Image (cartoon, rainbow, N blue to C red):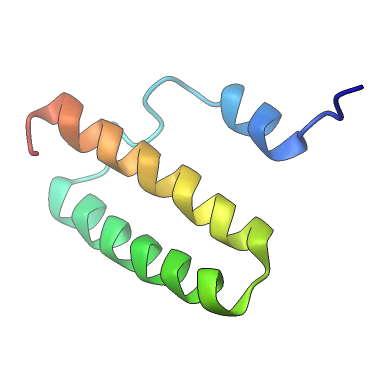
Length: 70
């Protein structure tokens, strides 16, 4: 039996491009900070916070790719 994953469910119900209106420099800064946070949580925990950081970083990367910034 699989258990529901509320974080993944919440992320799946978000708009397709939630960061579309965010200026590119701000988005790059958010990506850098989120990556730092993910590394810190990977070392210190909790794991759920690390997972959230990775999901957000993936969204930022997707938006930057869509814009042709990567």
